[in-house]
Image (cartoon, rainbow, N blue to C red; front, top):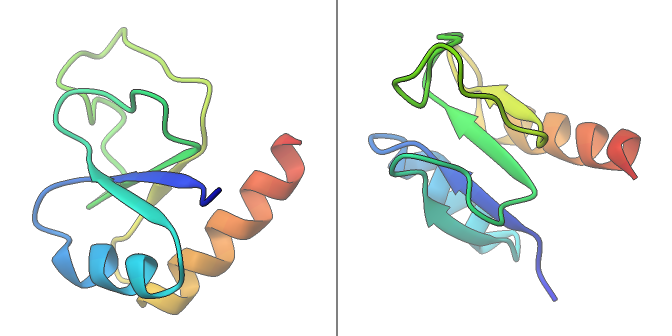
Length: 82
């Protein structure tokens, strides 16, 4: 079963790349749900629109990074979380 990755709207190039790599890619839309990791457009700590909301999954910034770099970070962070 493929890992589910939640990706913020506007990062279509990341969504397409991760899907081609075999990941189950879903829209972030307000929360990570059952995703193994979250990809956001920048380093905004309040990516869910609420400064006090937290998540137990890795949150990866796409700012200034290629899809390949993002995927490498996802793999490394998921490996550490296991």
